[in-house]
Image 1 (cartoon, rainbow, N blue to C red):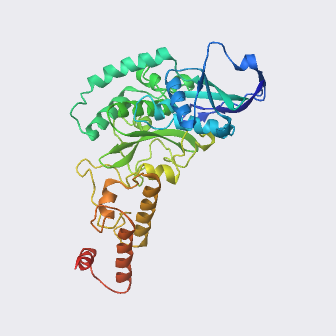
Image 2 (cartoon, rainbow, N blue to C red):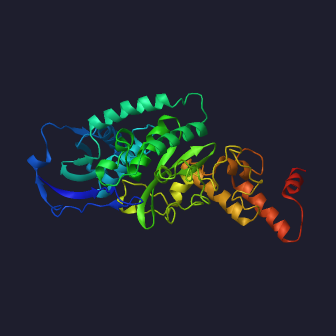
Image 3 (cartoon, helix red, strand yellow):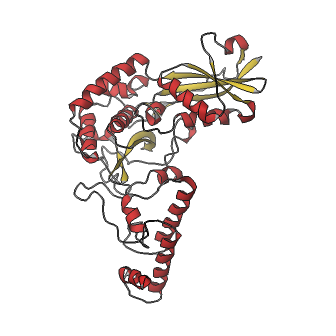
Length: 398
């Protein structure tokens, strides 16, 4: 039996300037053929999996333990080449709420290559994985992180206070390096060596926020035409952007802390042209999610404006879910879109403020009836009525 190399994914390291990524080329011998003895290794066992979900759970566990060669099998009827490998990898890297999984694990990978071959009705898959850090470095990081988290006095704090304390610690204790490469692309480098490029900053923020109980995601994008990395964090009903890399260079000014979609680049630092959240990482799928897609933005609803500690859940006018101070078909469309997405995925796509504004019927459910009320009111005012929306809602209750 001979096993061809079917798929090679090479993950790039964060490097120069704002944080471009330098990619390693796919090896010229990627079409090599492995013999059975080369494919199978006597010290490794094949985990028999009934489906891709089971395979993903096994793969996730093996990757968190830094296994460099991983074998698993699937029924041949479920296997369709590199698409299936990508599916398993994507599921293994999905968010779990565990600080060493999800985006943390995603950012721990340097590269992987997959091989497979069929034996009867079973497909055996082998993954060769290269990591940015090793088990010793991860153990050192975990010990150091425990000391730091204990020293920050987070117990009893609100999520906003926790986020602020952690953010200040990272931006004040981690420097942007003059060199680039894998060695400065990890949370280990950021926390232990106190120097990192944007990927290391973002991975450390993710790990610390998640351990503090704050929902957080890594965001891949670009700035000045080169790839860049930052985070979003969930505080009081909405997600906000944070860029610890850039704020590490602003002398504690927090110019990029808990910002909204409309004011993330309210201040342009050091001549940079801002953050571009288009899916610049799509070529690396499934290692990086499609951060600029509708699906991602619907699952992680971002606030329009920066977080205000004095008004943590900014008020929206009833029905005005896009917060443009006008009730019109655009608001109804957003509600219908959110309703459709929810019934198909169970994801709530509105922020807390938007949810409060969207439930104009007052029945505790956001659905097509709310959109119908807004469209009916819009039609009323478009035909010359000057009735307020509040009074219009009262007429519906009569």
